[in-house]
Length: 102
Image (cartoon, rainbow, N blue to C red; front, side, top):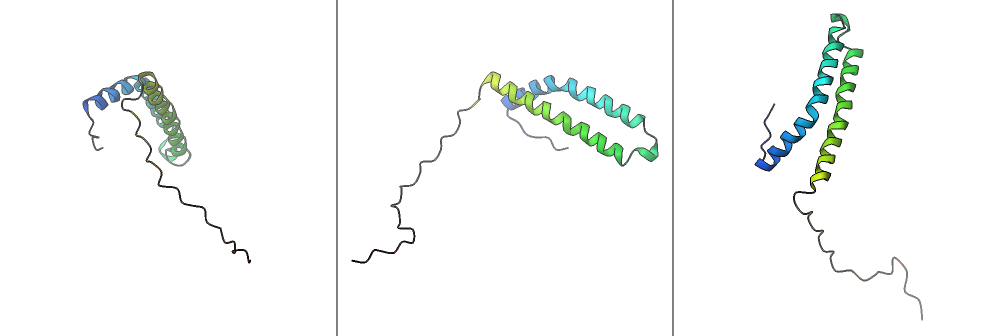
């Protein structure tokens, strides 16, 4: 897997997040190992693959929530960018109306 380049501040945040979520990952890794050990070779694929995938996907939501919670606690590191100024407003057009006859 490719290493993602991080600034020192991002590396510190990544380490803090890892420290918070690693117990969940280790507990889930143990459950997956137990799942795989409980199946014979003929049953490792198929339904077992879907169960394993579902476990991995369920692990993703709490990790994202942990990251969001940590950012809320520490605030936003940088100010949010400002929105662009809207272009000068155009005059309304008649929208297909025909000019009235005199």
